[in-house]
Length: 200
Image (cartoon, rainbow, N blue to C red):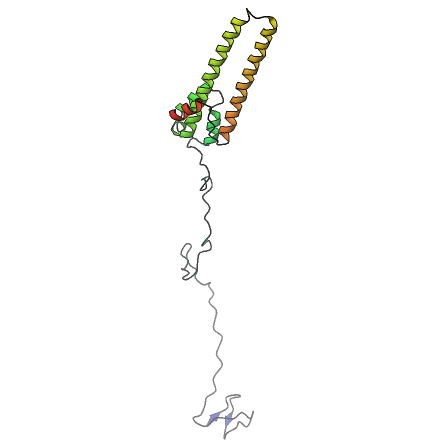
């Protein structure tokens, strides 16, 4: 006895008498009962533990080929790194001229600035510049004190203006040296700069 694959009725012959579906010859076919729906699991699927993600074979990491940024607070390549004491070289070099002889000697004693060749050069140049300015002022004052007793008042006024011009020139040179040092320029005073470079 054969059964229709479409409606499940018994078939006698080559066609179903109920729906007209042709029935293949051969062994009788049993109708397939409908499959019940599969129950869904009441619990969620197990996830991968944190930090143990499956490897992605053949895939590139998201930052592949991109330049890695250094951590915050660390200098980038090609930029001047701050000194170990927290002050950059150009700031320390400019401060060598702040109080002349005093700050020059101070930066030759303090670490790590006393091991920096650039800072040592500016410290020695500040010391030599201060000593030269002091000697020049003392010598000009002595000459001016001697000549003021022999020269008339008009010549005495000329020497007073020359003394004022010398003081302004020394102050301008002091400011110029600080500016050059802050801009990372190795400006050397004639003769004194070469002497400072040898000492550094």
